[in-house]
Each structure stands twice: as structure tokens, then as C-alpha cells.
Image: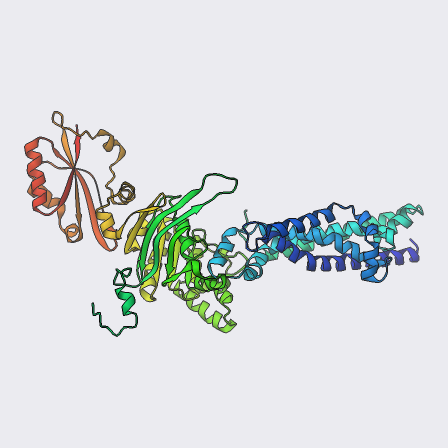
Length: 221
Length: 370
């Protein structure tokens, strides 16, 4: 492989890492409270607001059912508003974040719904406010599941990031399509796939390790 | 009572509701709770006109089978449920009239101990005990000092940094008790606190509760489906059956003279007044041939310390078969039951039973066996 191609691989890897990291960070920032709301606003829960729950739930479902490539082009005006431009790596972070947020919200929601209701009952009997229950009981107890869920979300984001070449986002997927496929350079394609495999493996291993460290529940052995 | 007392609450003391000398920490006034299940199913009456009073410093046992309304009762006392009818007063305050914020403050003064401990798996023993103090907004130094005191009190100082998954059931419940006591409650509610533990560990937990009651002024309500639990530590017992209090009174009286069938069943299970199955099936109401009379003798208090068996042999002057028997300690007093068989002919039987009465033993003719 020529030095130019190696440089391109390095640059694309950097772009993928940048897009995925920022989108995962912003997606978690938005998805965590959204997921907490989805879990605690159900009927009979501590912040019961069934109507609002249904509306937010419908919006989340709608976003999740839009194919990512369509989302990318459909929100170009919004992307321009936020990022100042609709093309380039930074601009690509906008659709990635919008795709990641409802995904992470659902992950957080299901992690919180797994928390033993007895713990909420205990906290309520201690006179905890709903906010205290969320901050001191629900989120800490859901942390191991949330960590695993976020790992899943990051792996999915790596996959989504391959599509942002459509708006000049760059990254490994874009490199594979333009060089490996369109210019008939199978070695580039192979290198791209290999790097992606290593990336996903690394993310999964780190995520598993973090979840294990956070998890103090009794293990079934 | 001195009506001209200068006590500021003299008027309240003389009010008709204050029938007891001691101050009531919890008072339920004909409380009814009806649940309306979703989906239009028939409403469920969990509690039906329940009146109950828990005096300051006492341990009250509430016993009932599952579904009798015990958990609803707990949730009414700590205000997590509101009564459909009637009033729940805790420290003379009607829980239903409090705002949500005031109800939360009131709940901090009521400690809860749970059957399944309900400890946070993400927190160490010390941090679990700290939770109610964090909720109450204490500063770190105060929390740390209080937590160390509490873990010492329950004998778990060495386990402060262990996670619940590294503790045994008994240790988890000790953490649960320390946590329940953290905010210095005046009332402790124990909801089936020993039901998930083995008998030996349960006994240790009950000892701990009794000791805590002696050491710090605390009122304890113990909810259980096991009479053994209530028998050892409760001063008073209320029996709950299908949402109604069918019987209540001092623990020893309830054990010695159970009136309601439900109470008799609970009491019988621990005092041995229930006969072995094969014997119960064989008992006939009328004598036939040379059938033997089956008599239950009960003895309590000082009587239980006397050499009953040799006395029986002396006064009865007949052959005595012992069919069943046990001696229990109830609320600190011994209580014994002995089921005996004696010759069933009228003369011998009447001589024997009048002899039993003469030495001051209670007896009951259960029937005749061949």
C-alpha cells in the first residue's frame, strides 16, 4: 500500500473515531434524561405522566424507524442550522446524534425498568423525592445495564458512520466505498474492514469490562 | 387522673379518644381501604374498618396469612397509600391531610425493614445505611459518624465496605435495620422482616430488635405470618383476617385464650394445641367400650414452673398416657400444653378432672380414643 493510502486510512480512522465519540457523548447527554423520563413517567411510576410518556415515546419510535440514510438527507436544513454547514465530518455528527439519542433513551429506559421496584419502595418510605430516587437509586442501580447498552449504541454508531459519506462526512466507510469499491482497490477495502473489526472488538471489550466493574449484584455461577 | 393538672395537653388526655394511659404513636380509626383494579375487575377491600392503636415504646405484632391486608396496613401507616375511609394518625397527625412534601418529612421518622432487605446492590453496607441520611440532607462528616455508630449497634462494623452480594441473609437484614434506624425514627415497621431467613438467623434478628427497643426509645410494629416471630417479642398482638382485625390484646392473653378460629389456628401451630393428624382423626365425641378420655391440660405463668408430671401422677391416681405436649415462652412467660389420655369411664374421668381443677390447672375434654 502506498504511503498516500496509509495516510488516508489513518485520517479516515480519525474521522470515524471523532464522529462516533462526539455523537455518543451528545447522544448520552440527551438520551439519559429522555430514557429516565420514559421509564419514570409511565402510569403508576414516580413521575407518572402517561400522556407525555406516550407522546415522547411516539417521537422516539418515529426517529428510530426512519432509515439512517434518509434521516441524514432529510434533516440537512437542521444540520445547516446547527453546524453552519451540511457537509463535512462535523456536520455528520448532527444526524448521528439524532439517531443515537432515541436508541440510547430506549436502552436507559429498559435498564431502569429492570431495577427492583422494592428499592423504589424503600426509598419512598425513607421520604425521598422523585429526583432523589432517580439520582440515588434508579440510575446507580441501572449503571451496569446502561454501560452494556451504551456499548451496543457505540457499535451501532460505528455502523451508521459508514453512511455519512453521502454528505461528505468522511470516515472509514466512506473510504471503503470510494477507494475500495469504486476504484477497485480490494486491499483498501480489506484494510477498512479490518480496522472496523478491531474497533468494534475494542469497544465491546472496554464496555464489558466497565459493566463488570460497576456490577456488584450477586453473580449466578 | 388530676383534671386540674397544669399539663398543657390535659384537655387532650381527658378527651374520650385517649382511652389509653400511654401515648399512641399510631392510631387507626376504622380504616377501610378499597382497591379498584384496572380493567374493570371487582373492587378489592384490603382492609375493612380496622381500628388499632400502637402505644409509644411497645412492640405490636400484626399477624395474618398472606392476603390478609398486612402490607396494605404498613403502606397506610407510612402514607404510601391513603385510606378510602377512616383516619390514620401517626404522632396525632392525620397522614391524609399532609401535603406531599410534609408526608415525605413524616416518612423520615418511620423506619422500614423489608422481607427482601431491599438494599442497593450498587452501594456498600455503609453507603446503604447512609442513604436515608443523604436523603435527609446531612453533611458528609455527620453521615459518616452516624453510619459507624449504627453498624456498631447491629454488629457489622467490620463489614462496612462490603457489598450486599457479599453478605449473608442475616447480615443483609442487619444492614436493613441499621438503615431503618439511621434517621432516628420514632417508629420502626418490620414487614415480614425475618420471613426470608432461616430459624436461627430469625431468632438473632428478633433478639436484635428487642435489644434495640430496650436501648433506644422506639416503637416497633412487627408484621408477620409466623406466630413464632410475634410470640417472642411482641407485647401486644392484633390478628388480621381477610382485612379485619378479628382479635387483639396482650400477647400472652391471645396465646393463652385465643377466641377467634383464625387466632386459634395461629396459636395452635406454636403451642401444640393442635393435635397430631393421626390422633385428631381418631378422636370420637362419645365414649365407646373401654375408650380412653383425651384431655388437654394447659398451665401458664408460675404453674409452668411446677413439677406438673409428678403432681399429675399423684392427684390422678390412674394410668396417664402423654399424647402430645410442649412448653413455650410467650412474651417472656412460660406456657405449657399437655395432651393426656386416661381411662374413659365416667367415674375415673370425673375424679381425674376434678383433681386437675383442684391443683389449679386448666383442662379441656377433647373426646375419646379407642
